[in-house]
Image (cartoon, rainbow, N blue to C red; front, side):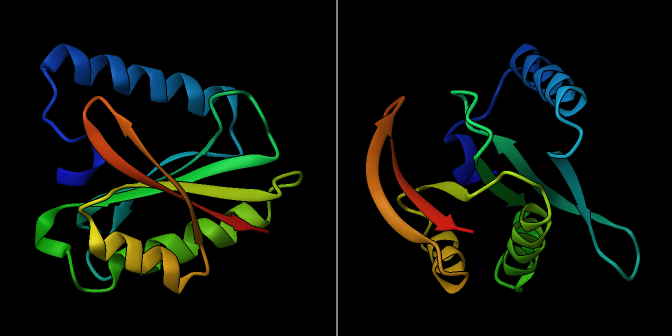
Length: 137
């Protein structure tokens, strides 16, 4: 998860984040965090997510994905993003998707551009340079 959070977490931070995500999944069952597994053998390779924006706007959802390094560069990120976009198209009310990536993550930016996401701003959060993209549905 090199480009997801920019640093490793302590055990307590990991637990807190995990619990927060479980609560979010219960609150909004139509969206959430998903494990990503290989079709042929069920082996876990990463995560995908669809979440509403932090401001509570249910017309805008954020998509994201992360994979174990062993599976980078094999097309799985594209497959995950296509699945998340298609799933989101079936959720009533969502009109736009957003995605945020570490500015250094060229591969992830390429995946977003291939799915017609457009860049709209750069920010710095906790010292990490981020790029923000969106896709109108």
